[in-house]
Image 1: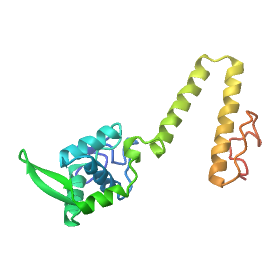
Image 2 (image 1 turned 135 degrees about the vertical axis):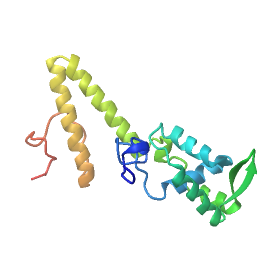
Image 3 (image 1 turned 90 degrees about the horizontal axis):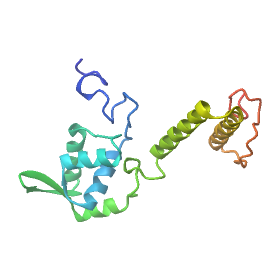
Image 4 (image 1 turned 90 degrees about the vertical axis):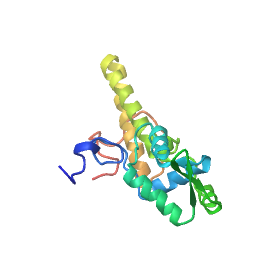
Length: 184
């Protein structure tokens, strides 16, 4: 099973493509390391722990990605290394502090409110509420929930289409076939 993604030891770990876990975009680890080291010096294992904790377990970069990133930052003279308690501890240099200060503090891995992870969480909450209405709601509540969900779907597609977002009316528009408004 050697060399196959999603099998063996790495199965289900965040950062892999299996199990629906977070797949970080290129450069995200570099930015995350700079932001963390701006808070305090850390060793590589601490960086991995912090990223996992702050992402709510969605992202756990491997040593095979964290340590090369730290080495690259050292090569670029953005971090310096010192031995503390027998561990290589990384600290930002002045150039590293400048690089870190130009980065936004709230990122997807921090659970920031503007992240795509926030949309996924809100989507799960919406689905849970809709399921609860479908289980215990009256026929009238279920009918209203359908209207709310249809309207939400249409409004989201309008955002993608760059149309003007109409105020929510609660009444369905279009032919009710589940396709986005304007889709042929």
